[in-house]
Structure formats: structure tokens, C-alpha cells
Amino acid sequence: MSEPKFSALDPAAQAMASLHGETLDAALARRFTLVESPITVGTGSNAREFQLIKPSNADHLISEADYVHDERLPYWADLWPSARVLAGALLDEAGQGRTLLELGCGLGLDTVAALAAGFDVTSTDYYEDALHMARSNARRNLGVEPAVRMVNWRHWPEDLGTFDVVMAADVLYEKEYATLVAECLARALRDDGVALVADPGRLALPAFKEHLPTVGLRIVSTTTVPFEEGAVKQQVQIMRLRKS
Image 1 (cartoon, helix red, strand yellow):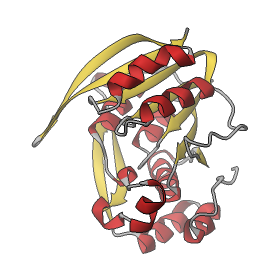
Image 2: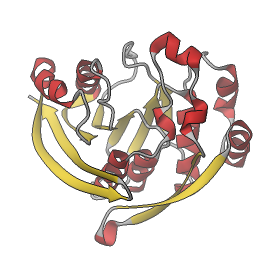
Image 3: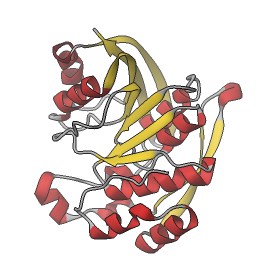
Image 4: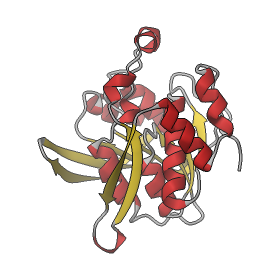
């Protein structure tokens, strides 16, 4: 098992990079107040239930220092509808023998679904804690961990490589992400690959679509999936993108 690649932003998270299995779970339980949530995704014969751990309250993780530094907020610690919809779609994909990169893995639900579908998964996020949580959730559900990498979209790592599939769920919530996400997708996608982007109609979605041709990408299909749970009602678009 290769060791995760992290920055040195958070020494406590850095020290956790060598932990796996129950040792990692115990370290996360000391770091956060955790709750376990059963999540069912997919439909029909491909439907699966996963057990995810997550911080009990994402608002408690807000760091003024992080926000002042680069306007980071702990969106990773919530389970967003778009991630749930994309996870269901991933279970219908044939992953054997294919590589997959996730932009913004958060709690790891889509990473877990992609692993369950047979993909060789690399999960990335801008928060070290998200990568640890994704590793833990993958191991507790499937007995394996994804490769993980700390990635800042503004400073894309030259050695990350390209992938058969690149996916992202609900990442267009800031205006600047319209161009950043499009550029990252184009850099990470193989010439014959496909990108899957799930979005509930965020602020940057129109500009993202407009920017795609400038980075050599095009939308080949869009599926809209209604999501409703309690007061939350969204129309989640799953866009499939290819290189032009």
C-alpha cells in the first residue's frame, strides 16, 4: 500500500498519513466527534448501502485562519445530494481495468462507489482530513483504501498523470471554480477518457459550461436526477464530458 501524499499544512493530519485500519479509525475518533450514517445509493439490482462516518457538525470545523488564508470552508464534512446521486450513477459503470480520479473527495462516498464498481481510484481534496476520512470510509465498507493525494486546484501537480475517468460532485459553488474545475478536468483526463460532473445548479455552472470549449472539452450528455429528502429538493445534473 503506497503512503498518502500530503502537504505540511497540518502536522496532526500529516502524522496520520501512515495510519491505516482500526488505528486510523481511532485517530479520527480522537480528532472529531463522529457519527455513522447508513447511505443507500443506486437503484435496482445495483443499489448498495454504505456505512459512512462523518463529523457530527461541519460548522464546528470552520477555521478563521483557513478562511483568511484562502477562503477555505469545510464543505468536505457534509454529505451533499450531488455526491449521493453521482455515487448511484457510478455503480452502473464498468470500472474493471480503468483508472479514476476524484476532484474533491470529501467524506469519500463517491470514492467508495467507484471502488465498488471496480475502478482503480485516486482521491484528491484540499483538506488532509477529508483524505483520511475517505480512506477510513473505503476500508470500513470494502476492505481497501484508495490512493489519495492532497491537491490544490490553483497549483495542479505536474506528476499526477491522466485517468480514464475524472469525477467531481458539487464543486462549482464559487465563481472562480468555473475555470479552475474545467482546466483541472482537461489536464487530468486521457484523450479517450470521460469526465463525470454532478451539479445541483450552483453559481458557477453556466460559466463552467461556457468555458469548456476553451480547454478542449465538450458535454456529450446530461442526465437530470431529482433528489428529495426532507426539506432538501434539488435537480442534480450529471454531465458526461469528453475531449473535443
